[in-house]
Length: 165
Image 1 (cartoon, helix red, strand yellow):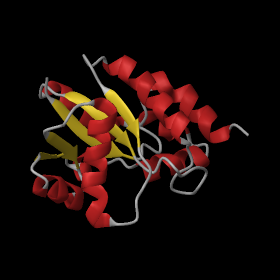
Image 2: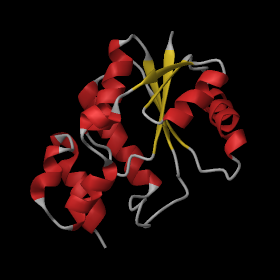
Image 3: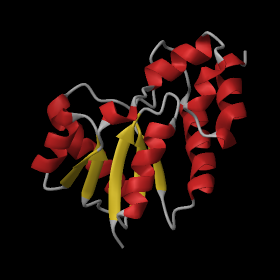
Image 4: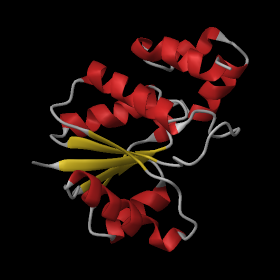
């Protein structure tokens, strides 16, 4: 069974993330999704806690319907040089699988995973014209435009996650 890796913060998950996951499935891989910055909560860049992000991803996977997938929370580490081994060791330990392909849009991450012996597949972020920062800004302003960028099956949960007290 072939597995591919995708790492993100998913603050919140949006159509750009969906495109990456769908590309993984279309290419014949079972997605292993690492939800980074799991220790962060209620900050400007990380307003959603890890439980909420995993729930949103799980709901989304029911919509996308891959054959098999894994969602793994992972906290940040401070030494960049140790990041790739840290991610891969945790993925192997938690899932029992070693992904062979890394999907992403960040040039540094693509290069680091390639150096670790993985195939790196670049997803063009510019072509997507979307960012989680933009979506968070729309949501905070209560501008309904955010709904264009987030799959409808998770609209209510995303909204409630931002505005629950």
